[in-house]
Structure formats: structure tokens, C-alpha cells
Length: 261
Image 1 (cartoon, one colour):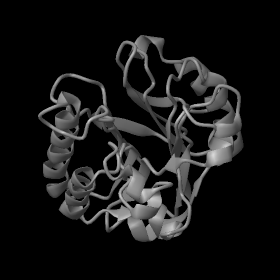
Image 2: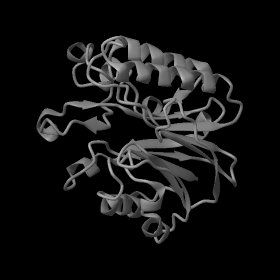
Image 3: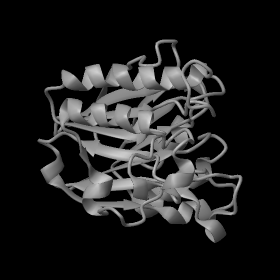
Image 4: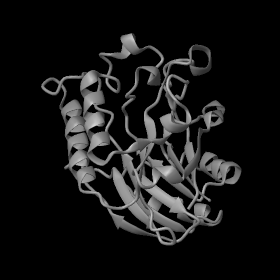
């Protein structure tokens, strides 16, 4: 059995104790982090290696974005795609050497506040990012796990109020359609909704702006998708909501999937 976790940590250096706690308590074999907000030389490599995660692939950037995949299992870095087309560090792919599984760790842009390409450059960049990913996915020919912060909540039940959020970036029809094209390009299986079927509550993000435990105004922005040939080997999937209750938490919570490999 192999377990893979994904988590938008919102600054790995600021929340290193929380990363260490998750690694101790959840014990995933592989952890994919997004929004590490540091350059590679600043990544807490030794602290994570001391916990057994000695295999590391870090694609960092000063102050913003950045992704990293750390593993207890031997792995090799495969590539870093620039789907943003501007040099931002938003993707890293690794191959687990023993199983041959490829894990693509991605941080899709949030897209700003206005869901209009003409009025908001960031929204157009997000749609273009998804289009570049779709062309990539169409050519995939290996068992692949695609994980990360997608910044899109695709289903009506993936947000606390579907009608209220139809014009809010992350849940607009144009984003949902773009994500759907990415799904169809490779026949991805959404593991979150395979194991926690709609309309069950399955949020992964709550804004800092609202008292989340009282209002529960969540969205499912983080995802784990498997290739059609890998999905049948998934045995469990969970979201670790307790981390959102910790002091100075990330606004996202980890997802963990176990595979029989």
C-alpha cells in the first residue's frame, strides 16, 4: 500500500511544524505541497529528511507560488511544466521508481476577483493555464496521479452556496467547463468524489475572512485525480479537516489517498 497526500500549505517555512505534525500523524509515503512561497535553497529540506522524507523535488519561487514533492520512497524528478507561460513555479512531476507511477503536483492560479478575461488579466491566465494542461493531458500514456490546488470547485455541492457563488471566481460556469475539458482529455477519475460521493460534504478550503467553523463556508478547491488505469488501485481517500483548527493554519486542508500498488 502506498499513500499520497496533497496540501496547499500557504508558506512551508511559516507552517513547518504543521507539516511535520501531518507527516507524523498521517504518515503518507509521498506529500505534495503547493504555495510553498520560498526558493529551493530556503526549503526546509533537512527537517523533512530527518522525518524520513529524504527524496525531494522542489520547484520554488521567491515569496510566491512554488510546489514541492517529498517522499519516503525512491523517486526521480521528471519535468516542470510552465503552464502559466510566464516562469512561475506551479508544477513539478516525479516518478516513483518502484511502481513507475507518475505524480504531477500542480498549483493552478486563483484567477483574481473578476470572472472576465477582458477586465481581469489573471482570469484569462487561469483559463489559458487550464487549456495548456488539457493539451498535455490529451497526450498522456502512463499511469498518472494529478494532485494539487486546482482553484476550481466544479460541482454544485462543492461549495456552500451554489447560486451565490455562480459569479465568484472558482465556481463560475466558464471555469467549470474548462476543468471539464481537462477531465475529458485523459478520462481522469476524481478520487475525492469516488470515495466521498456527491452531494456529501467534501470541502478543502475555507477563507480566512469568515469564521469557518460557525458558518462552514467551504469550497472543494483541492483535488486528486487518477488516470483510468490507476484509479482502480485506489483504496481510500480522506480530507484531514483537523488541520484547519490548528493555530495559524493554512486555509486549505490535506487530502490523502491510499493505493494498492
